[in-house]
Length: 346
Length: 268
Ligand SMILES: Nc1ncnc2c1ncn2[C@@H]1O[C@H](COP(=O)(O)OP(=O)(O)OP(=O)(O)O)[C@@H](O)[C@H]1O
Ligand SMILES: [Mg+2]
Image (cartoon, rainbow over all chains, first blue to last red; front, side, top):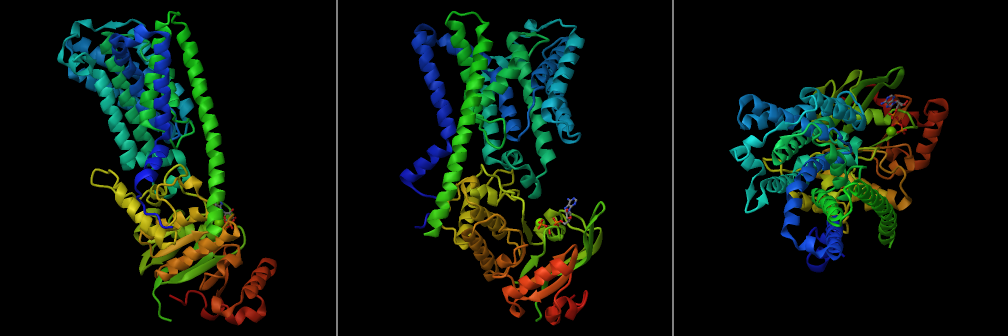
């Protein structure tokens, strides 16, 4: 029996199904969740404004979760991005205040601040060898502290810049669709391409899967990780800026609620915190699932205090499901190894 | 015999702090030759091949590869010189398909760095076929493979890289009998394709069937070298035991010991 590296028809379909099984499962969960909420509350789920409001808030969770996915696949973590969101947005707001206009320069400086903060994380983790969980908890407090000291806890109103070109480019509406959703989808596609079709994406996977192996074949681990932290810093700052523009106010607490939500989006999306595997698509849908649950909880009439509780339950279910799947996978690995042995001995 | 030397190493000394792993080792590999590098645990076998691959720098000594002299190497340079190391440590990424593992760190890409996926799959398929692994799917994640097949994937890396010298560090460790047999076949196929290999092992019964020449390391020194044609596996076993016990080769084998007949360094 000789099989070529490409085979046709049914076999190919099965292969595609098994290759994308994680994506299929997460999509199925998303659709059934939608169905459940639809059954509970048909009017809300048939109202286009429900989707409109999800579309306008989901990007703030999903955007940082996209680049966070890459970091988690590489076997590391970053918790400081919630503070970097605030740092980037603050720099933008302050620049505009100083210039008296909504200048693109403000956005550029905000993104650069994110880049700098991301690089600092990378250096702390790689060059100083601090475990990423600890290092980024440190920088999380550091940047939040910087923001609080500078603002003295006061918000910065930006409503007067509404309608400016930069507002429309970042958080305007195209046929009612929030532009920042389009940015999010566009960036998700870019990240997907890099992760699956580019050399750098391959390195990200290898660094998380078998770090010593990656090192021995000549992959520069530090370069991969520092680049990832830098990218994540920029994306976090970007998410912070669009959040601020969407609210037309800079809040010093900006980002706090996204820290766990974005991490949850990655985990619910099927990327295990152990590294080496994970998908951008899963994270995207994972973020939508969280927003849907939030919407479902709110429209079902209970108080907002329930949201944290429900998010907590969702995260735990997702982690438990991953644990079970990992065990099934291990059993499968063992079985398949035995099978290849036997078939070969015949 | 006027075969070309692929690799010559002279007077290699390597210390790890107070441990002297290699104490002046001379070592060479000729074209289309399989060298069995044997010796007890901790003899310095891995250290020697890691120096050859540029993972460690020797403290003293020189390395000559295809006529060019080096004080030390690095993995990238070693690749470029046509040397590939199949590690004792597993370098494969279990969650990823065979084709990605075969090209890991040496991906074929376009100018922008995007992967030439179909091309890599095709080459992987051809390499696996060359090793007789036609039933293996290039898409299979390597974690589903048994140990022998994993070594097969690591060895296919060597084939795709057009290596002249494949260094296998303990490729049969922790493998079943059938699996060991399979790895030995891969090594034979490498020889049939005109390549050279260094087969590192402390199990002489694994090395004996494939090697042309044995180099025996003991506590950081090459104590003996033999052609396979001069010895039976039992002779080799006797020599190894004697070296482990007394540190020297039994008298009756000394006239076959290339190390003594040629003398130090005279092969270059
Ligand atoms: N990175 C290192 N740091 C310190 N000591 C080392 C290092 N690598 C090897 N050694 C020491 O050098 C000596 C030779 O080790 P080496 O791994 O080369 O032996 P080996 O012949 O490959 O043994 P094995 O059969 O166990 O693989 C040992 O005493 C070992 O403890
Ligand atoms: Mg060793």
